[in-house]
Image 1 (cartoon, rainbow, N blue to C red):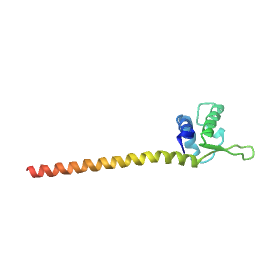
Image 2 (image 1 turned 90 degrees about the horizontal axis):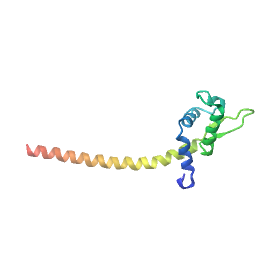
Image 3 (image 1 turned 45 degrees about the horizontal axis):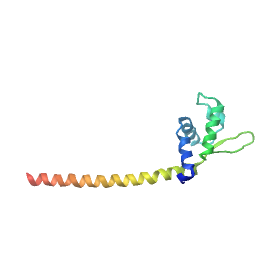
Image 4 (image 1 turned 90 degrees about the vertical axis):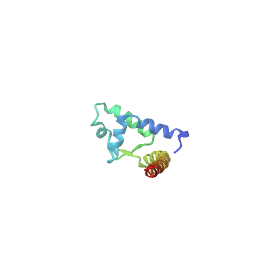
Amino acid sequence: MNSDDGTLDAAFLALADPVRRRIIARLSRGPATVNELAEPFAITKQAVSKHIQVLEQAQLVTRTRDAQRRPVHLNPARLEALTAWIDQYRLVREGQYRSLDAVLQSRAAARGTQAKDAS
């Protein structure tokens, strides 16, 4: 996933909305129709459909046809790509924090040794 091609931006913009995040959370339990996804919200089904379109454009969800039903499915590969992008920065930060912790612990140990020597 490359931020230059806009897909990363589209995905994060789609997830910036709390309604869309709740839709993603619901879809993590399995596919659902627009009617099922609209149930917990105090907005119209048309508004929910627009939210789903944004999620589709960001490739976070897909729709299939099952007779007259058009269930919406989570795209786990897309979420995995987002997670991988976030993880690369998280891992760098964790390494930096571990290094800082090691420096602070060695300084604290050195101060403890100096305090014993002074006694």
